Image (cartoon, rainbow, N blue to C red; front, side, top):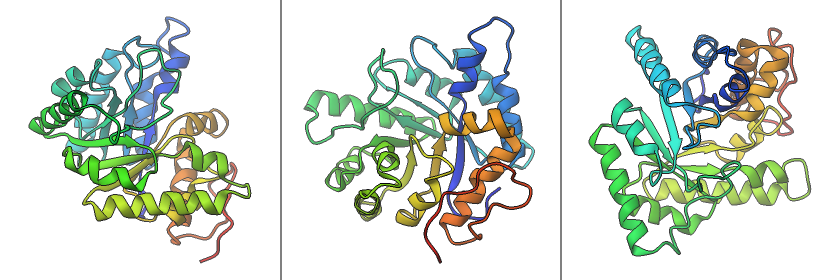
Length: 279
């Protein structure tokens, strides 16, 4: 596992998406989880949508059993279940009692998560429902992270509802990376991260993070506890294999924290970290 403080949680949705195109059970979601954990991933993330377009209910249960077994063998690993608490998520939380639940304000037919909770404009009824869901997760021992846009003023509102963490939605950072607007994006995320910590929250991050932008993101936000990465990581794994890919992402995390040189280690044959800062 990475020696840095930022944990890598691998989102396995895309493995399930490929599997679901046939009825053969391959590629195996649980096998992917085992290989990622063995390679040093600190956690596994799934987002079981109501239409089961990728992760199915059985996947959640099997991964829950797998993570319980893995932790029982003395390993450190977390199970993070994402989803909309107003849809199908809470039944999974109550059954599996995952380490973390990430609440995402998705509509049922949404292509992918594309916005955080608008806590400043949310009505009192919806706020009360969200707080009740947070309380229900806490009742089974599950930490709650709210998926949020990088807006500093919203962070105290997340804390008021009882959230333990926020997951900063990083798509706009990824879009700005490598362009003239990268410094501005880095400042926006750094400010949001600081505001969250000042409000008493811990910070996660995810969406469109990859081997090219992850190190720079962690330069801007060194206090991030966990990054959840799926689409890019599984894409890289198609070329490099799960083990080398997880090692490459953990290396980028170390580079971002100044714990490793920018050059990829010899055992990683894929692309190195697209990092342009010196420590």
